[in-house]
Amino acid sequence: MNSGEVKKIRDRFLKELEGSKSPSERKKICKRYIEEELSSVFCCLKDLSGENKAKVGKAANELRQMINEKMKESKESEETKEEWLDVTLPGKQPSFGGVHPLAKLQERCEEIFAKMGFISVEGPEMENEWYNFDALNFTPDHPVRDMQDTLFIKQKDREKLEAKDKLLMRTHTSPVQVRYMEKNEPPLRIIVLGRVFRNETTDSSHDINFHQLEGLMVGESISVANFRSVISFFFKELFEDSVEVRLRPSFFPFTEPSFEVDVSCTICNKKGCSVCQKTGWLEVVGAGMVHPNVLKSAGVDTERFNGFAFGVGLDRIAMVAQEIDSIRLFYSGDLRFLKQF
Ligand SMILES: [Zn+2]
Image (tube, rainbow, N blue to C red; front, side, top):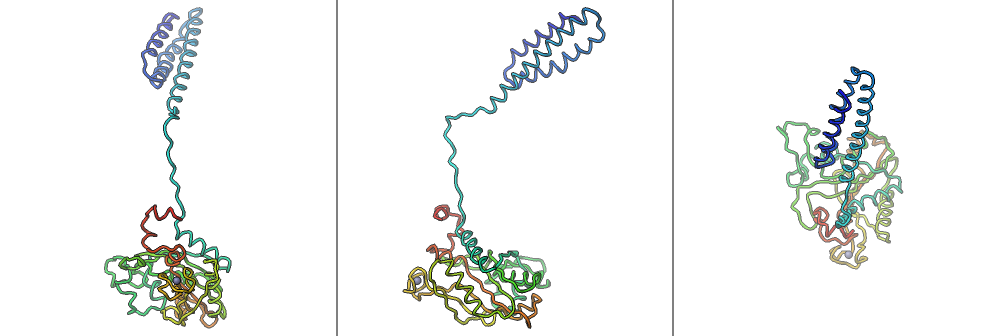
């Protein structure tokens, strides 16, 4: 080995580099020369002697420096190529999302009830028959259990299962009352906001799913007057208006006594319009004093505690508040509708 041979390697290297087509190819050539050709030169060095060793060493070092420089240049031009950006291309129009009108309403409900000390809790959308019906004092032959109204989950040998194992899509948010009371001691104030399901034919005011606001207050000596004040405060805050609230007797399996709550029509101000069907009032809430059987199902001492519960159809409230004429619009995913909020 002499310095002439190192020069030959250098010439070969430069020639190969010249013939290369891209920075990444040049980088590969540099790497190969350092790892193979140069390292074998350095390997031979220990067997050489005197002046020749010094010459070859010097030439090899110079060549290594040169290859390293070429490698650095190739790397840089490769990076610039990757980052190169055509600034003359037209930009992408960002599309903005928005909060769904129902989600907005749910948030507002939470805010209002938080002012009265109610906390918001959740429960499963797929329930079992015990929580959805039995625990809420529905008799085994209650018509709601019928296939017409409830979406049952297909299960093998369903008839043989216990009520707690028979699955369905919850028909109301009330099962969460029992679930919460099982784990928490009164006094308690909760609201439940969520989706519920019914096996219904869809039309402008019915869909297979809709949203409910459920409220529950349990404590010592809770009265209908307490309920009236809570629900009146809620609607006055929600409609930012002097709405009137009235209670009418009704029947629900899980409350006794039960009432329907009407609020004065915010659109016509009690004069009568198509939304309130000329009555001046909107039926929006089902409510009542919690039936002792429901409290017992959840293990609450009925000698000491009582309470009230109510359910509000949120879709209906949102329709009235925003003057929307079909419930189906909420679930259609139509941007022309959603962009208005
Ligand atoms: Zn009206």
